[in-house]
Length: 232
Image (cartoon, rainbow, N blue to C red; front, side, top):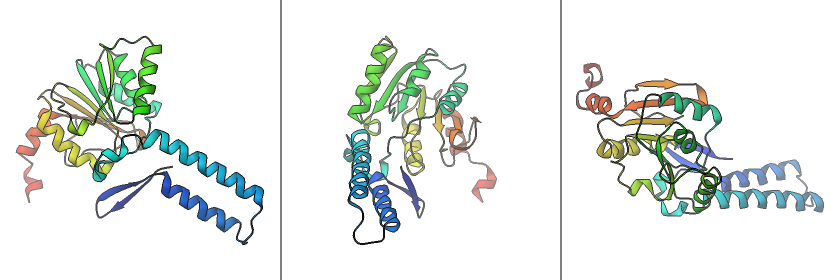
């Protein structure tokens, strides 16, 4: 229950707190009388409290430490999205960083293809959950590592593959960071939301599951020497 609202090009994330308020408004519309049935009131309150609890557990830990304009809520990748990422990674090798790893599903998919993966996640509960999955799957730490770390403050120059499923409002800022830090042979894969002004190497899928691949060398060359049509 996450709502993205665009305001003058800036995408602000409103999480479940706002959704709960809308639910309460809907509830009041369904029961307009001043004295609703006590059983209905109790059940509705319990449901809303449970939803808020789940949101707090999986979204809030570490969330307040991130500047407001860079905040991105937890939204797991779909199975189709993960498969699309792996299609774009075909033929690649080396170290992979997943930015905002969540429960680790993209990391596990990439590690199964031979990548040495690091999942960056600020939510301590999601990090613990992903680590437990790696433990029970007996995946060695040399192949998969989940770190409770803010990737915005981390040097990513040691990774030649980067995956990200974030939010449209942070893609431009993320692009600036990656262009400064990644090696020339790096490949960047973005899920659902493309990088503005970056030439795509390829794209797979459609709709919410669409993924985009970018070669850092090509992006740098394009930005240094933009087409004449874009300079007019």
